[in-house]
Amino acid sequence: MDFLMLTAIYVLLFGVSVAFYLYKDHRILCTGPVGFLREIIAQAFYRVVPSVIIDWSKTVGYYVLFKRNPLFQLLFLVLVILGHGVFIYDMLPVLEMFETEKNHTFFPLLVLFTNGLMFHWSCITDPGEITQKNLQRYSSVYEYDGNLYQQNMICTTCKFQKPARSKHCSVCNRCVHRFDHHCVWTNNCVGGLNHRFFLLYLMTLTLMFAQGVYVGSHCLNLYIQRFNLWNASYVDHDGIVQPVTILIVFQHLFLQVPRLVFLVVSLVLLTFLVGGFMVYQFYLVCINLTTNETYKIKELKKRHSHVHSNGTDDNARTSSKKQLKSSAKNVLKPYQQSAIENLLEVFVPYSFIKWKNKEN
Image (cartoon, rainbow, N blue to C red; front, side):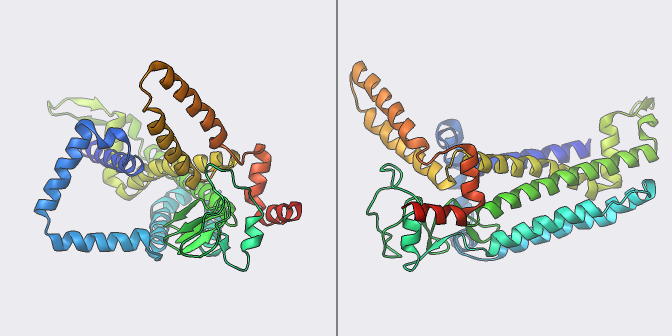
């Protein structure tokens, strides 16, 4: 079962890599047996690999992840081209052979064009850069909540008081209104003015992946029907003729159309990964939180938990827990309105900013 082994290894490595990236700082991965194993591997790596290569890798990694550069943009375009290359060379011939009356290119091209347009706008649009000229405009949009955002906090780089919900992006070297995060794939910040394009980019990207899964699976099914694989048989190691199983059929498909099978498996994983991130982003928008603010809330909770854990008697600890819960309620969603208002704030940002300035 070479195909199953390769697929299992691929899925396992993909899942483990994603888990380690998303939860690399989680207590479970930093302490106990897993943390000990990570430390052993790290020490062995630094002892075996020459320091010159390690220093070079750190330099390259810093440039790729913490400096503005088009590498991930180019990588995204290459992956999209390769995926659609498989569509042209492996899928279309099958579809045109068995379903000649249908148009198999309109919807994929429509999704591709829409996703490309959203990607382009996410890359080039202003996320809400704050300068001395527009500082007053952005300062009037949100009030300081006193927990996540304190008044009179000066940006040491831009030399002005940071408006509430803004953050200085170290990658782009600018303060950004309603800063969410810096996206390496778009080589741009995701902020108050372009968050809508980023959300639409995630939506169309997820749709493109899901469409690829559907069309690719449909082509594999047509191939199975064409050669009547479900009614085929094979000779086992004992020389006995056996009816094929689903595992045998998939192994046969892997040998005959490996690019198509690999693409479908990859797109299934990517659909769940990118789709999950899209849902998370929409959830944050609906409760009027940014990704940056979720990190700030975690840090606040850690500080509160550390302070309150110093209580020695049971009454003090109980009181600390109550204070922590009460504080968390006030801190978690300081800017939340109704879900509709929260969505409008993101999808019509210019009108929202204009309205807030008039109100103040």
